[in-house]
Image (tube, rainbow, N blue to C red; front, top):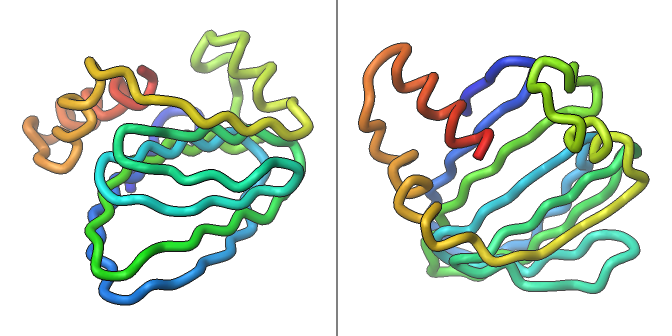
Length: 146
């Protein structure tokens, strides 16, 4: 996990699930972007139909209230994913992105989408750490903002 300017965080996860399990988490208010590079998880979010997050797809959840998010993870699978979390209290002015400010004030919106193919190699490099020291942190922040 890397914490960035304004309170945003970037998390790259590489996990081998030996056993199937269901996880329920209280998602704090804000914006969460979850990208699945390998594996899959069945997702349930209030006021939205269930869907499967598969390799090559992503989801964006933005909400101003705490919500419960549930994921059913299959066993004997490897899951690689990237998450960008922007808490509701972030100073959106730091990023100079008016749409971010609007997203952080949304009651509840969840969108499931395909990852642009041009982003896949860059996202995969988050696990390889191609840069060193401060350059690595700057590069990761750039990827998160994309």
